[in-house]
Image (tube, rainbow, N blue to C red):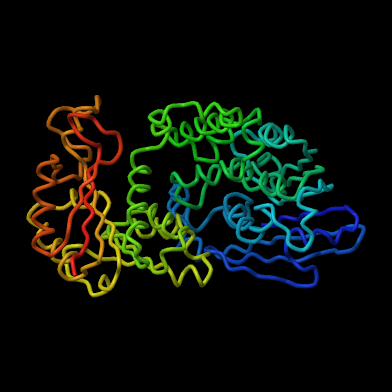
Length: 466
């Protein structure tokens, strides 16, 4: 797949400063599914063109892409249009190759960041299976682009077969470089519903960040959000709600909301992770285990904090580890980041020397998935053998369940939960563990807190007593 960006801004060589790519050099950047090649077909003061050629490796594509839509027929993983269509692959490449420009930085000529320049973009090819030309125009034209399209027939030898869903797209606009790249980053995947990555809540953050300043005013806002998030209703609803919040905050309405209303805008899971992160920071430790790390949401938060120089995530599910790796873009991390982060496959009921020597261990909503008769093995693995200085452990508070209108009496929050404890049951277990393995204990309530029923989640903070 090929994308070219041209400008006639004088001197046109400024494009090299803005995109942080030297016109005299051919650069190749490794991606999880192939290589991105960056070069300049032409470079002069009158006109400069940069080309991004994405060379997708079919073997890497089969190994790394989790998209089930490629399995609609038996050879779907091997016979498909993914190496040729500018879609989610090109967005990942744009973020990796032009990250500095996408964030609005230019160290060589900072005055260019806010300069609107005449740009022409050519993309061969894009796919618009649902919406076609009208969809492409509705996405780009409201942003000021002149849109020119060439639709391709299915087969030149068999013209009776008709036209395909593929177009060569030409865009022209006078715009800042950051705006151009952010538009391409969001809108190209929105055209094509096949995403090569697992779509999680993290995609909401990326969408809102890249769409800042323009998405909320776009007349096709809802369609862009829905298609970017692969038509997942819950994520679409959350993203649309947060877009409205961002508009309100500009008028300082958000500052007038009571604290309880602000908290409702965050899911319990995110509030729980933030509370655990804060406790980890307060411990002062620098090396940390996330045991039962799942798809890696807490790991991503830990990576952003420079306090933690050694991070290890472990999960019993290999599938979840692959999701965590994908969500953190592990294969595309810098060597420095990879040195900080490790992911391992393992069980919390078997002693593992790899877990020893860490300052902190976080165990978030994990123990309730274990059979009660396995808890003693878990206790020894964590508190006797791994023996971190601080252990932060959370589990549901079963007393709070009666507040959930959709739950029937006597049921648990998740079908995989083996048990859910009351506050008294958790306190007894945690106190016994702390006394047995020489830890002090502090218990806190997390999430919404009811005066009689306690919090949605209960958290134990164990500190090793030397």
